[in-house]
Image: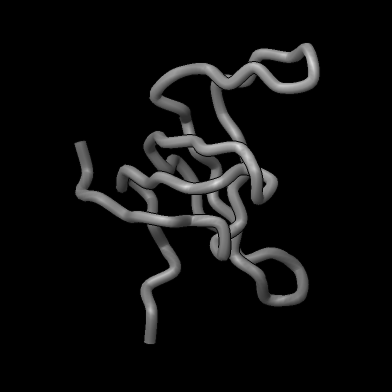
Length: 70
């Protein structure tokens, strides 16, 4: 069984499948229907659609790499 709770760990992934991001997971949750989603505080802000974001919701299937807690 794969561990889905990544709270406190550093991850890299693709936000919305297209935008590379990295940061620390502050919350992992199971969504309605069984999917997993992580709230990630970004290492550096992401400018997307005229908005600057310092955290994103990253679906588990878009996580590329999991590192240790910083």
